Structures are given as structure tokens and as C-alpha cells.
Image (cartoon, rainbow, N blue to C red):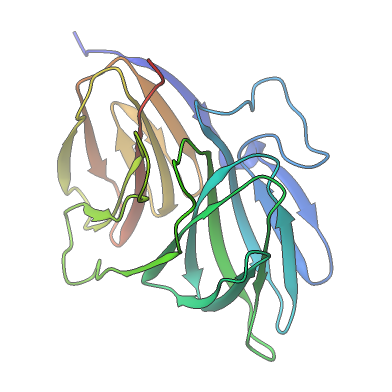
Length: 235
């Protein structure tokens, strides 16, 4: 018998959608005017937006509560600044970890004249004891294929999510073992297709898993890219 764990799938085609001439955003969870009874947060993970921005344009979002943010460019380079005075730049192959208090604003900009940029935003409710300076991390998924690369955790937290990213060849398999079986595992397919714990996932699909000690992943296409977050639950 195939072992089953509790799960909830977030299909790409069912995401919320905002489209302007210069900006396109897909929302895995309820965000802005998009509201759906089945698109509620997964523990502290309450925002997962897949955004595309036209040349020389900017978009700003204000935090509703203390938040940890993972900003991950997928195509191109973005610049960013916060209302707390932090600024920076990140390109595909890098990510930024930010910790912001409630009512702070982050503005993300496309520095190019004519090219589009695409980036992911993951927002978590924060339990930080202090809001630390942003961290920039560079990773080489092409040099370390068929494995998961751990991204840096936020500093100053009693229990911060663990993030991993990986690029896989078709039919490559890997097992991810959770550090605590009471934690939640959330996976998001950036590119290609995967089977995760016996569930089929296509590009931009998300999957939350509970009550498991380990998860089995298999890439079903070449150059398949996946992002994982192991999210501690409050005890």
C-alpha cells in the first residue's frame, strides 16, 4: 500500500490573477481582492506571489503584520528597497531574505528598459525577536544538480522555516527527511514537472504536506526546478 500523508494541493490554474499593462501577478493564497475559501494560508506562510514586471516599472506592497520575506528572481534582475532604509539588487541564481515589521513597505523594481523580469515572493508571519538586515544568498543549481541546496534561514528567530531549491534531470529522485515530523512541508514547482509524495505537480503548482517524516520527490522532466520550505508549527 502506498503511504499517504495529509495534503492540500494549490493548482497553478486556480491561482488568483491580477493583470495590468505593465504588471502581472498570480496569487497562490488569498491576496488583495482575490478571496477563495480554499486558498487560506499554510501555517505562517500567507503570501506566495508569482510576479512579472515590465521595464522600468515598480510595485510596492505593505506588510499587514511582522513578516519574513523570501524574494527570489526567476528571470532577470530586480532592485528593491524598503521603507526601513534597506536597498539592494538580486538576479536569477540569488535570493534575498528580509525581515520587516508591520506597516513597512517593500518596493521591487525592474531596472531594464524593455525586458520583463519574473520573481517569486514568499511571505511568512514572523516570530523574530529583532528585525535584522537583509541577507543576499547566491546558489548554483546547475553546478549541483539533482540535489537540494539549503538557502539561509532568517536570523533572530525562535523557529524559522528552512528553504531548499534544486534543479533535477528527468527521472532523478531524492528523499527529503523533515527535521521534525510535526512540521509542514510546502513545495512549489518553478519549472518542469515533479511527482512529490505520489502527487503529480506541474509548473507553478504548490503542495502542502502534513504528518510525515519524509517526502519522496521525482523529477519528470529535464531541468526541473523545485523550491521547498519546511515550516515549523507553533507548539
